[in-house]
Length: 110
Image (cartoon, rainbow, N blue to C red; front, side):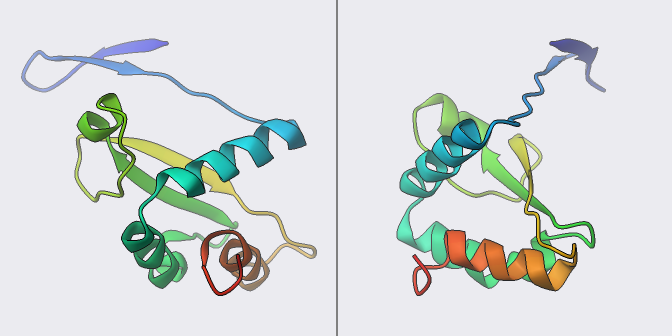
């Protein structure tokens, strides 16, 4: 854990977790998808193109306070937990990664 001080003197704690084992990744994604509401999954699907960078990394923010209360919901706010998911495709391309992300998150593909 890294500790920082915010602009107003508030403590900021940064925890980074990298999942590399297929089983861990699969379990995390399945749990994440189950935790999101249908509305958030629909929103995520509609925003996949703007949330994914050219390297196939999907950028998601969930509400920190909501997560603390046991709820997972998408947010655009600063008080959030940042999730970055590398969605591989072969050969690597944003379009290939978007296809795979749609298979994971979009209900017509689930």
